[in-house]
Image (cartoon, rainbow over all chains, first blue to last red; front, top):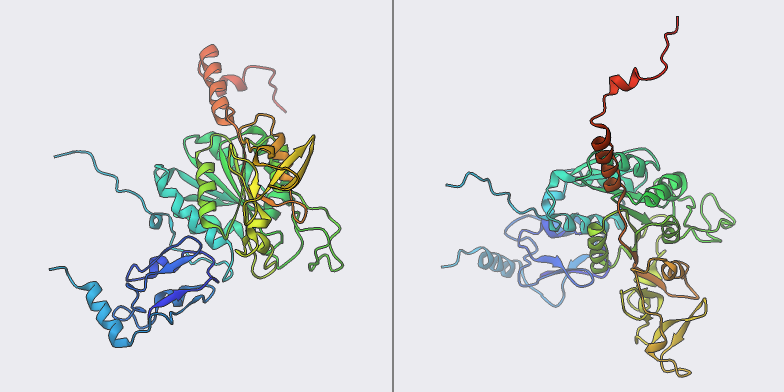
Length: 84
Length: 341
C-alpha cells in the first residue's frame, strides 16, 4: 500500500527531504504523498523513512491504494528504471 | 573560458543545519522553521549575510537549526544584540526569533525600543501563550482566568496583545500569522523580509504539551472562517464561512455586521489600509479578540520610514565630511586630563 498523511500533520516538513522517491510535497493545507511514487520505501530501505521521522505519527497506510510488497517492488523498479 | 565562478542557486537544504531539532513532537515551531528555511533561498541574499539572533526559550533554539550565522544570546536581550550587529554590519539580513516570555516579559524593554528606532531587524515572535521551556507557567499573553502551575486559581493578569504593543512602540511593519496555515505564514514572512526598518511578525504557535489547542478556533477548518479575519490591503474587512460578515465603524466604535441584514452592503464595511500613516485602524484591529470579534491575521501596518542604520550611516558620513576622520588618541588627549598619583 502507498502511505498517506492524515490531518494530524503539523506541516513540519521533516518527512519531505527523507523520501527516496520524492513522493512527498507541500499541499494546500498539509503535506501530501503521491501514491504513484510511494513504495513505502520498498527497494530503498527496510522501513518507511517518513514514518520513522514524523514527530506526530500521522503517516499511515492508504486504504485506497492497496498494494502488495511485490507490487511495491515493481513500482520501485519502474520508478528507478533509466528511460530508454 | 570564463574566469567567474558561478554561484549555485541556494535551496531550502542549504539552510538546514546538521543539528537534530529538539522541540517536542507536534510543536508548532517546526512549521515556522520549515517556512523560514524555504523563504531564505528566495531572497537573493548570500547565505553568509544572514544572522539569526535569539534570547532564551523554546523558540530561541532557532539559530541552532539554521545553517547561517547566529547567536543564542541573553534572555530578552536578542533585540539589543541584533541592533548592535545591524549597526556594525548594515548589509546583513538580521533576524530575531523570540517568544512571548522572552520578548514581552524579561525583554519588554529591548523589544519596544528596537521598534521605536525602526532598526532593520526582522523580529519573529512565536506566541504560544505559555512558558513552555520551564514547563507551563503563565506568560504575558496568557488569557485572563487561565489556570497554570503558577496561577492555580486562574490568572488575574491582563494579557498583552503583542501587535498592539508593537504598534504603540511605533513599529513600521506589524503582522500576524499562525503556524497551522503554511501558505499564509509564507506570504507574511515574505512581506516582512522585504520591509526596510523593523518588521515585526507575531506567529500564533501551538504548544502541544503545555497549552495545546490555544488556537483551535482559528485553525480548525470547520470553524476558523467565522473566527478569523484575513486582512488584505485595499479590500473590505470581510469574513465568515459564507463571506457575509464584515466590520463596520460607527464613529469610533467597530462592530460586526452581516451583509444583507438591515440594509448592510459591502460598501458599508471598513476598507483595510495597512499604509495609513496614523495607524489608527491597525490599532483598532489589534484589539479584536474572540468572542466579540474575529481574530485578524495578516499585515496590520506597513509604512515606509527611514531606518535607523541608514540614518546612523548618514550621521557618520556628515560628521566625517565636516570634520574629517576621527582620531581616538587625539580625542583622549583633547580635554582636561589628569594623572592619579
